[in-house]
Image (cartoon, rainbow, N blue to C red; front, side, top):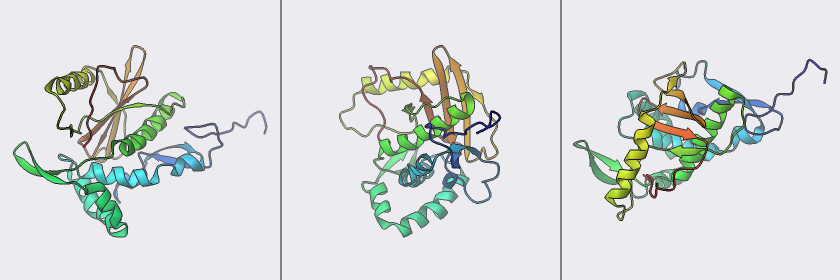
Length: 225
């Protein structure tokens, strides 16, 4: 290697980059919405590490109450095809679906494997942070405001604490970053004392926050569906 050559390494580790990873994964974007997507250098392992979780997470997000028409149509096409190809995925995703009332509209609620969703979101935050700051940080605290409590023994106090915690993000000055398909994906960054907080929004509705550090110990319950 000459002095003018610089080794390009993966966004998440120190292995040589052999490809580009889309952020978020390309499968989140319907056909016609894949121009000028964000990418970062990636090794083979981190390019394919969460492929099953990506499929699961995309299907879950695109079914959530409030997603725009782009998300709804993407589920009806890409999501339904994935269920036809892998029937077990349908059972895994909607095993306990039941009717609930949300803002006067009857919809279906189901228990989500939150850890799978968090794994995908953590990879996205790792990649975005590498793009923004050049840092390789793999551990992120993930906050999923769209998800609700499923435990019947959750107390009103716990719900109130969670609501107070979420309200903190509304006080932060997030700076939106330019993206080419905002109807699919948007992200913003807030610089705070002691670190940086990221927000991501999918299909104009599903919101995710990520930051380095531990969730406050007073937060004793978190959404699980």
